[in-house]
Length: 120
Image (cartoon, rainbow, N blue to C red; front, side, top):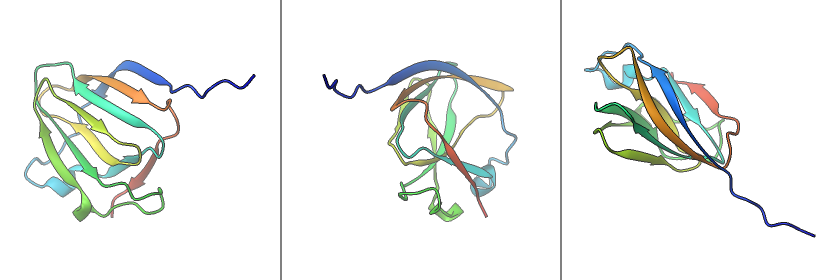
């Protein structure tokens, strides 16, 4: 008997450490960006504080990573969740103040391999 493929969802809390950054120089914030080819992710902060996320359009493969000029940074207000479609390049979350920040994380497609690239 063939069983239909089951979509896997994982929901968990993650504590991220603050990355020191120069808030005036956006492109210097991001040294490493991440890419998950087959994973959709929703991310939202637990603490009542804003946070930042940079994204770039999917490129189709980890070998075709975006350049710093391709990134767009956003200030995410408390109470908002961000959905990252499969293949979206992302850097962050970044935040100021606290040495760490807790996030709800909903992942669709399993906890597969996440690739990274260093920005030039």
